[in-house]
Length: 568
Ligand SMILES: Cc1cc2nc3c(=O)[nH]c(=O)nc-3n(C[C@H](O)[C@H](O)[C@H](O)COP(=O)(O)OP(=O)(O)OC[C@H]3O[C@@H](n4cnc5c(N)ncnc54)[C@H](O)[C@@H]3O)c2cc1C
Image 1 (spheres, rainbow, N blue to C red):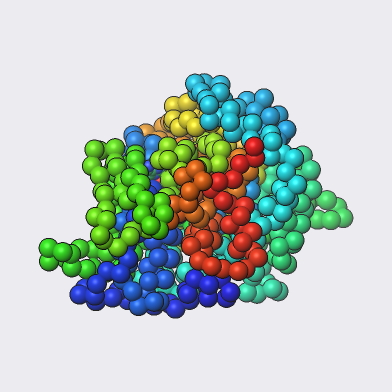
Image 2 (image 1 turned 60 degrees about the horizontal axis):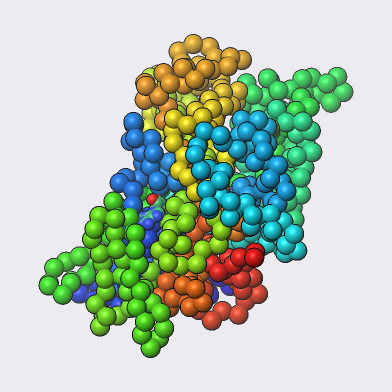
């Protein structure tokens, strides 16, 4: 409640102010991903609470939310993956110090490797070299463990905020969450009876030496931040909870005369706190909702305008700075299409929030400080397998979300009956790309998509058999077989990148140009591998940078995420 009251949230009020009410403040958001969505939402909520009208304009460089077939590259990351919601999602991406050096010496397709060899500049561009050097320096930072613990706590806070946005939403917003397969991460409501979609989920680990040891380490992390119901599950328990995993259970277990059915040594299942959000469904609907919720105003020429506007194909390439008695400030933006939006200095000051995410180096190129950065590429594979009318009933209860771990690979995973088809989405695995952008025809994406389709076949062979029209149990699927699923519009391949600062911490709050604070600019970025999970918490903290808050946790997060930080 402390955090809700700090931001003046928790009202649950969603009605827009009347058309004729004047606009009290304006906000421009650069980058239109999930961080921008949360920035817009919280700005609106805060204004409503204060009885004020705010107008928000989002500028997005991409042309659409979801990549259309044949145009696999779309920048909007969260729209092209299936989001797993966990407290530790953000921690999985940056190896520390010597570990990074070691991993960079191993090709991405080998266990533990993250190096690509077919992308010019990925390993030796100026940005890549700077990043690697900073990671090496950072390895000896004594506060590393404290940073990690604070991120876990921020993750837990963010899980609560997702649930709060849902619970305090009106019926329309709740329906959007339900359509987006939202399952929050929280302590279960029924301790004595495990159920899917009650805050916890099944994670599968297989093909991993000492799988149980790995799972117990995960359990210890969740225990340490107050989750009390983590447990190793037996194959029988998994099958009872989720009968659609029966094939997987029988393929990876055996019957012990004394203990009954137990996992093979390289396999285990963990009952752990975790939820999911089909962010590709959620983001477009959520932006539509904001447009309605924020209402309209009458401009200086007497025309009616929407208070919330989202503009595609608007890449901000320059910032206009101005100095006035209050200090340095942003006075406008220049765009790649040759247009500009420069403020009339007599107007009230606009707040600018930069959420460029995957476009690492954007803060730097726009003239702000940015901690050393790099992108880690990641693929997603989304399957939509059409069902005949007579098959739909059979799969009506099919719905699970998990993470599936194999040596060197973790996939966020969602599968369910969606629009008369079986939808299976997986996203995950990484490689170091420096400041380069991954492409779908490079070795990394081709190889990893092949691994992903085979992991889906390992876990849910019934559905890959349906898609292929032949029994695929125990088979290894070839790249050609995946291509035929893409050609049949059953599979959609996508590759994108995660934005990461050298210490793996998000960059939040005030922006600076050299030593000067920019009075009306903030950022929420570098959310790495956890932006779907962490965006409410990150935005929450970022907004507090403008306020005089004396709370040790907030102060710590804002110190660690300061956009001026450097190891040198
Ligand atoms: C394969 C993969 C799997 C993932 N799985 C998960 C998961 O399971 N759970 C989880 O929590 N997170 C996951 N993530 C991470 C998550 O997707 C990101 O952290 C999140 O998308 C970051 O959100 P964002 O809005 O900050 O940045 P982005 O989603 O990168 O959005 C930034 C937007 O800004 C736009 N932009 C950039 N520069 C400009 C500019 N100059 N002008 C205008 N527009 C600009 C970009 O086009 C983009 O649309 C995954 C990421 C990948 C790649």
